[in-house]
Amino acid sequence: MPATVREQILDALVTHFTGTAVSPYTITWSAVTRSPLAVKDRRKQYALSIMDEAEEKEAKTRQVHCSLTVAFMFWAMADIADNPSTVANTVLGEIQKKARSALFSTTETPPLEGKAVNIVEVSNDLMVDSEYDRQLMGRLVFLITYRHALADPTLVI
Image 1 (cartoon, rainbow, N blue to C red):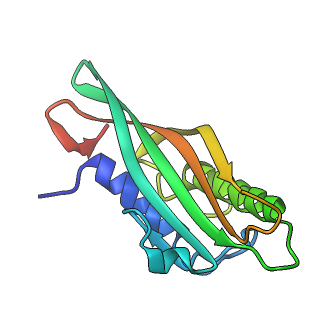
Image 2 (tube, rainbow, N blue to C red; image 1 turned 60 degrees about the horizontal axis):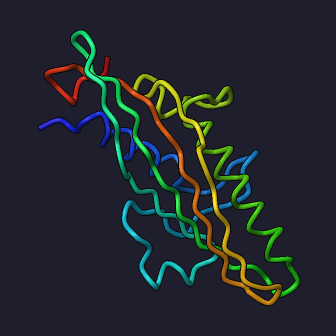
Image 3 (cartoon, rainbow, N blue to C red; image 1 turned 180 degrees about the vertical axis):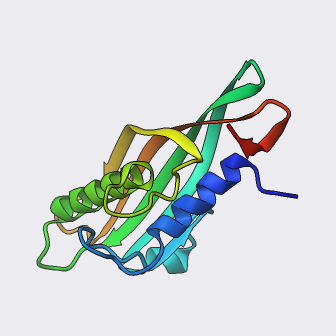
Protein backbone atom coordinates (compact mmCIF):
# COMPACT_ATOMS: atom_id res chain seq x y z
CA MET A 1 0.00 0.00 0.00
CA PRO A 2 1.36 3.47 -0.83
CA ALA A 3 2.35 5.71 2.06
CA THR A 4 -0.09 8.37 3.21
CA VAL A 5 0.76 12.01 2.51
CA ARG A 6 1.37 12.41 6.26
CA GLU A 7 3.94 9.59 6.18
CA GLN A 8 5.57 11.01 3.03
CA ILE A 9 5.99 14.39 4.75
CA LEU A 10 7.57 12.87 7.86
CA ASP A 11 9.94 10.69 5.83
CA ALA A 12 10.95 13.71 3.73
CA LEU A 13 11.73 15.73 6.86
CA VAL A 14 13.94 12.97 8.31
CA THR A 15 15.81 12.66 5.01
CA HIS A 16 16.17 16.45 4.82
CA PHE A 17 17.91 16.58 8.22
CA THR A 18 20.04 13.45 7.70
CA GLY A 19 23.53 13.66 6.23
CA THR A 20 26.49 16.00 6.32
CA ALA A 21 25.80 19.70 6.78
CA VAL A 22 26.13 21.75 3.62
CA SER A 23 26.39 25.55 3.63
CA PRO A 24 24.55 27.55 4.94
CA TYR A 25 24.04 24.88 7.61
CA THR A 26 26.72 24.01 10.16
CA ILE A 27 25.25 21.12 12.13
CA THR A 28 25.68 17.53 11.06
CA TRP A 29 23.19 15.48 13.07
CA SER A 30 24.67 12.32 14.63
CA ALA A 31 21.19 10.79 14.85
CA VAL A 32 17.86 11.70 13.23
CA THR A 33 14.91 9.55 14.19
CA ARG A 34 11.11 9.45 14.15
CA SER A 35 10.92 8.02 17.65
CA PRO A 36 11.98 9.32 21.05
CA LEU A 37 15.76 9.55 21.23
CA ALA A 38 17.47 6.59 22.86
CA VAL A 39 19.91 7.23 25.71
CA LYS A 40 22.84 6.34 23.41
CA ASP A 41 21.71 9.03 20.93
CA ARG A 42 21.50 11.68 23.65
CA ARG A 43 25.23 11.24 24.28
CA LYS A 44 26.13 12.28 20.74
CA GLN A 45 27.12 15.82 19.73
CA TYR A 46 23.77 16.51 18.01
CA ALA A 47 20.68 14.31 17.95
CA LEU A 48 17.20 15.06 16.60
CA SER A 49 13.82 13.41 16.93
CA ILE A 50 11.05 14.37 14.48
CA MET A 51 7.67 13.14 15.71
CA ASP A 52 4.15 13.71 14.50
CA GLU A 53 1.55 14.65 17.08
CA ALA A 54 -2.03 15.88 16.75
CA GLU A 55 -3.67 16.53 13.42
CA GLU A 56 -6.81 18.49 12.61
CA LYS A 57 -8.76 17.70 9.45
CA GLU A 58 -11.46 19.57 7.59
CA ALA A 59 -13.41 17.86 4.81
CA LYS A 60 -13.95 19.96 1.70
CA THR A 61 -15.34 19.11 -1.71
CA ARG A 62 -13.37 16.02 -2.83
CA GLN A 63 -10.41 16.82 -0.58
CA VAL A 64 -9.34 17.00 3.04
CA HIS A 65 -7.38 19.96 4.45
CA CYS A 66 -4.99 18.79 7.18
CA SER A 67 -3.01 20.64 9.84
CA LEU A 68 -0.34 18.33 11.24
CA THR A 69 1.59 19.17 14.39
CA VAL A 70 5.20 17.99 14.21
CA ALA A 71 7.63 18.24 17.14
CA PHE A 72 11.39 18.49 16.64
CA MET A 73 13.18 17.47 19.86
CA PHE A 74 16.93 17.98 19.96
CA TRP A 75 19.81 17.12 22.27
CA ALA A 76 23.18 18.80 21.90
CA MET A 77 26.45 18.69 23.80
CA ALA A 78 28.20 22.00 24.38
CA ASP A 79 31.98 22.21 24.66
CA ILE A 80 33.48 23.38 27.96
CA ALA A 81 34.42 26.78 26.48
CA ASP A 82 30.95 27.37 24.96
CA ASN A 83 28.11 29.29 26.51
CA PRO A 84 25.28 26.69 26.75
CA SER A 85 22.55 29.23 25.97
CA THR A 86 24.37 30.39 22.84
CA VAL A 87 24.82 26.81 21.63
CA ALA A 88 21.13 26.02 22.30
CA ASN A 89 20.01 29.12 20.41
CA THR A 90 22.32 28.28 17.50
CA VAL A 91 20.79 24.79 17.25
CA LEU A 92 17.29 26.21 17.55
CA GLY A 93 17.95 28.69 14.75
CA GLU A 94 19.39 26.05 12.47
CA ILE A 95 16.36 23.77 12.93
CA GLN A 96 14.02 26.71 12.26
CA LYS A 97 15.85 27.59 9.06
CA LYS A 98 16.25 24.03 7.79
CA ALA A 99 12.63 23.07 8.53
CA ARG A 100 11.36 26.08 6.56
CA SER A 101 13.74 25.27 3.70
CA ALA A 102 12.07 21.87 3.40
CA LEU A 103 9.25 23.71 1.63
CA PHE A 104 10.58 27.14 0.71
CA SER A 105 14.22 26.64 -0.34
CA THR A 106 15.63 28.63 -3.23
CA THR A 107 19.00 26.83 -3.29
CA GLU A 108 17.84 23.22 -3.41
CA THR A 109 14.79 21.24 -4.42
CA PRO A 110 12.52 21.38 -1.36
CA PRO A 111 11.62 17.83 -0.25
CA LEU A 112 8.11 18.90 0.80
CA GLU A 113 7.37 20.63 -2.51
CA GLY A 114 4.24 19.07 -3.95
CA LYS A 115 3.37 17.45 -0.60
CA ALA A 116 2.77 20.31 1.85
CA VAL A 117 1.19 23.72 1.46
CA ASN A 118 2.82 25.51 4.40
CA ILE A 119 5.08 24.99 7.40
CA VAL A 120 4.92 27.41 10.33
CA GLU A 121 6.69 27.30 13.69
CA VAL A 122 4.13 27.67 16.48
CA SER A 123 6.36 27.36 19.56
CA ASN A 124 9.76 26.43 20.91
CA ASP A 125 11.28 25.66 24.27
CA LEU A 126 14.91 25.45 25.40
CA MET A 127 16.15 23.62 28.47
CA VAL A 128 19.46 24.92 29.77
CA ASP A 129 19.70 24.49 33.54
CA SER A 130 22.90 26.37 34.34
CA GLU A 131 26.07 27.80 32.90
CA TYR A 132 27.74 24.47 33.71
CA ASP A 133 25.13 22.36 31.91
CA ARG A 134 26.76 20.82 28.83
CA GLN A 135 23.81 18.64 27.76
CA LEU A 136 21.21 20.85 26.12
CA MET A 137 17.67 20.04 25.10
CA GLY A 138 15.04 21.83 23.10
CA ARG A 139 11.70 21.36 21.40
CA LEU A 140 10.27 23.15 18.39
CA VAL A 141 6.69 22.64 17.25
CA PHE A 142 5.68 23.22 13.64
CA LEU A 143 2.26 23.18 12.02
CA ILE A 144 2.38 21.66 8.54
CA THR A 145 -0.63 22.09 6.30
CA TYR A 146 -1.34 19.78 3.41
CA ARG A 147 -4.24 18.34 1.41
CA HIS A 148 -5.18 14.86 0.30
CA ALA A 149 -8.03 13.31 -1.67
CA LEU A 150 -11.23 12.79 0.30
CA ALA A 151 -11.31 9.07 -0.44
CA ASP A 152 -7.55 8.41 -0.50
CA PRO A 153 -5.06 9.74 2.12
CA THR A 154 -2.17 8.65 -0.12
CA LEU A 155 -3.16 11.02 -2.95
CA VAL A 156 -1.80 14.57 -2.76
CA ILE A 157 -4.23 17.29 -3.92
